[in-house]
Amino acid sequence: MVYKRKISAEEAMLGKILITKDMWKRLPPPGAKVQVKFHGESLPVSIEAVACTCRGPLKPHEHYYFVLPEETQLYSGQSIHLEVEEGAGVS
Image (cartoon, rainbow, N blue to C red; front, side, top):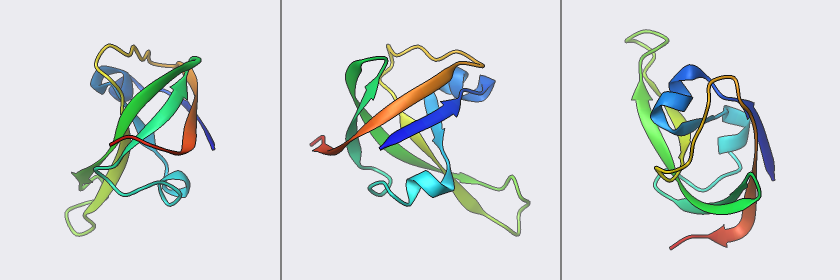
């Protein structure tokens, strides 16, 4: 499956790619590791959940992210195409 997104300044700073709700429902749970193709290179990434109260303290929820290897560069405004390699989990 392919995930397309425009990278925000926060994502670029953190080295993480936000996973939208429609996509995270099709992925393994937080803590899982998967292989993705990013700019033609196969990378191991983990899925992370971060607690959030951006909708207010009475509506706590989680945001999900692909956490890329530290050496992977992301830039604010960059359009990315991330291909999740199905059945290619990382142990």
